[in-house]
Amino acid sequence: MSARHEGPAVLSAFVRGVGLLGPGLPSWQSGAPVLAGAAPYQPCPTVLPAPQALPAAERRRTGATVKLAIGIAQQAVDAAAIDPVRLAAVFASSSGDGAICHEICETLATDDRQISPTRFHNSVHNAAAGYWSIATGATAASSAICAYDASFAAGLLEALTQIAVSGAPALLCAYETTYPEPLRAKRPAPDHFGAALVLVPAPQAGGLARITAQLSDAPADRMSDPRLELLRAGIPAARSLPLLRLLARRESGRAVLDYLPEQRLAVEVLGCP
Image (cartoon, rainbow, N blue to C red):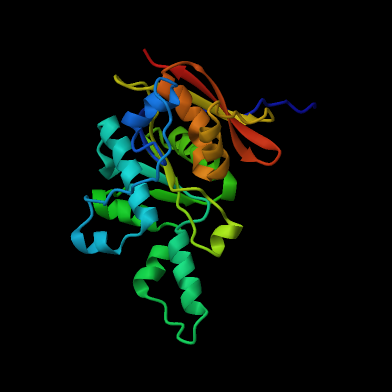
């Protein structure tokens, strides 16, 4: 009996809300016209918002990673007008909180190797997911994905797979923060950057687009603005920019995103009316 050839698996969902925060891109509302080419890109340092949804005691303990993740997740959820309590979530980051890693390494290099409990629990890769559940009361399952430079595409695949299996909406939250020296020399990143998507299994009024994703060997798309291209190439979460550009333009098309060395992720976008 001859084997049946199966085509590449295709996953799909509908984009209901977007969050964005990065250098010169302080929100999706102000950043979308820039990505769409309707406004000039003016780079400036990323300003991280205080996570006001957290209790004061928890808010004081948060670092850059948690502030960034909660900031973009809250943007996306607010834009989608969806209750986060029962919203499954995927948090994707290539390396977690660089500043906390640096502080722990500094402590371990001294004679007194006592690690602060706050620093320790902020260092774990799913810290942002935990703080999100505290901030929103979310009770649905959350996943923390780490795939080095492929983390955005891996997180998107995870979120789309969860939707295909559960038939329920999901939040994708991808983010990166910078490292202090000397770690920065080995893992350079120009600034903090994060992007979030609320994805739903069926079309809804006010939705942005339908997306389908499958693996591809096509080359990854680049940004036409050299400064945005530097951002895309320099920060793993910013590999999302070609997809965000299509969503900002509210047009149909294909965005090929960096994923593995020999494989990319092709995302087809069909704009919603």
